[in-house]
Image 1: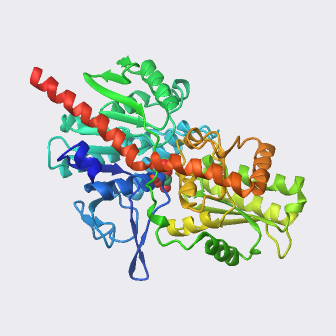
Image 2: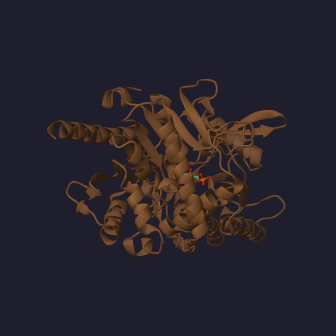
Image 3: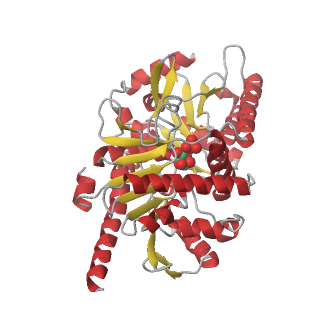
Length: 491
Ligand code: F6P
């Protein structure tokens, strides 16, 4: 609370994101609440919980959908409400075009180097524009003041900042792009590149995870939009409006809420090993995320195969548990990943395992954050092998879960997190041997080395937590509001 009220006293806060922080599903006549597997939600929810305000998001659960009217708002978090959730209802046809189509078959593969061809269809673009308009209108309708602070999240809403700016010229619009920004040549593939960039340049601040992504953005703007770029002050001026473009590496809350009430590490180790049927002394590596082709899940399973092939002494003594939350399953690239992962796990288990020993456990199922943290605490190693990732908060959550200062993080060099967590074992996920060697080193790492590395990583995540991420953006926003006020007086 101090965060917002000291930096921007009296400001009204609105968040816009596709994913909602709490999904309300109808199960057997009851309403079951799920927290989604989303880096965006893990980062933003503690911030708005602390500041209060209104979160506008797509209502994705099965409850309330038919009964809720367009103005419907509920208080959350359940049990201890501190902010309002306004859900926007989207038809299946709109969702196919806006979310599955333009956002996830177009912009997602465009911005990630994963060698999946982006698909751009005119009809998807029309739905994307329509839904962006709907969310912008919701912000305009919800805003009680002329100059709210609007936090626009991600590639689902590139057009929203400009749309809001047109109706609320004095709004402070902080847009955060949660995924990488590609180079100008790659971005030029997008048939609506000018409109997307123009939409984003309605923001007061545009945040990306790394300076490298900011540089890519400047080059893209330079190539496709009439504007003035001031690299020294990190600004772009277009249509008479200045946008600050800066790197704000996203993070997690510290201490994480999911850590409260966790059993001691020893108990987590015993209970998890018992639950999955492995020996109490067996080594356990985990991978936990959405089932997405950018995450390098197949690559890490191949590294496990390589480890067991090169050093069969691990057989029976080591298990890899992959927990993958189903995601975007309607898309062929995601459903085929699911089939490939299951087939790969079966193949490895048949070659290296037997009736009693299955080295790869693949669980395709959503897990709530308390369960995820328990698995992190039970593990000897956590593998994050993304082929490309803006930041990757799973890596930071693993570190935050280990208050015993043990456990080893194997981390892809293609994540934003690798720039901050230098004490992880940094790997190239395309190099199977390198990854399996890192896995072997992680499994053999002496406790004192684990402690030294974990202590430094924990210090980093503690200091550079999500409140600092939000605080830095809000400080920059406050400076921009101050400049605006001075300019208004001067003119
Ligand atoms: O962090 C990137 C991101 O795409 C978020 O925008 C999103 O909430 C999360 O990953 C999960 O994806 P989805 O919302 O499509 O399930």
